[in-house]
Image (cartoon, rainbow, N blue to C red):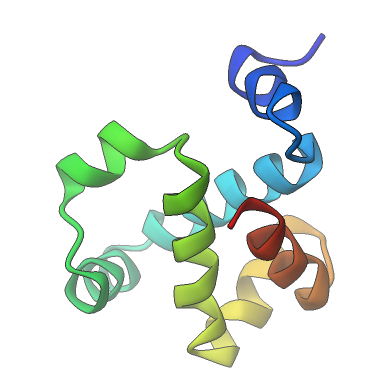
Length: 96
């Protein structure tokens, strides 16, 4: 059974896979302090923003967009999630 967030987003016409991949990307992006600090500094987001909007498709798409801006992170994140970098990018576009 899908979790409430995944099911909710799937009902809105968004792929549950895209949502799951993007949520994983957010988790990966903030899992290392220096990388999390860079995300916050470059996006202007705050930790409170991330907590409050962690399931917001627009925020998740923006996080993937941030990863696209630095290819080594995009590749490392995709590798950690077990997806191709192109699939990670497609997930972001699917949520935008």
